Length: 261
Image (cartoon, rainbow, N blue to C red; front, side, top):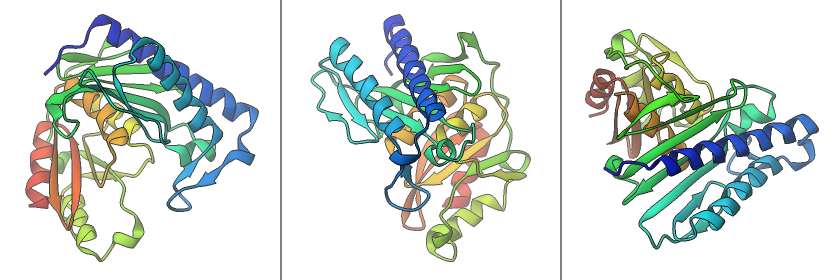
């Protein structure tokens, strides 16, 4: 595991705050004509997503030209340092477009293979609705606006709240059957529409398990950093023909892993 420098933490904080503030301002000014559909009617992109990603990429190019970049909206650069910045300029774009507040700007810094949780240096998430920046990693206790979060209380899935998403088309298929095995063990379920925001809530002990399949790195890594920095656990499990990403209290993650097996 790599310990982040103070400069890394400061830069990540500034990048997500600037990106989220830009997106929020663009939404206030109107983005209706720029809304595009990607893979489905619920998978959207706007001019704000693209502008926020561009702002992050331009600053990284100026300050960390050797680091790699992977952005949800197509930005990509090979790393010459082993480090990669993975960017989700607006996570929860459907909520963003519909005027809901559960969205954020998020990024992660990794050093090594992103598939390895040990490669996470830090994750950073900015929630404009809260005006709150969350930063944390395996070697960086998670903070909210610079204040440390309380240590995560461990709970089993049977006493916890599951936050998740499953496209309705997967119900009745092997992936849907795997999902049901986990969901039936939870005390409660929420489907909120922004994985990184869900993971800020898990890091704060408000929710207890994230479980979703086929999660891209930009939706997974920022929040995983926060959960790990708060004392939680993360893993990935193959079940129902897809790869599930789990993050939450250590016992809830273990319970879900067994349910998926």
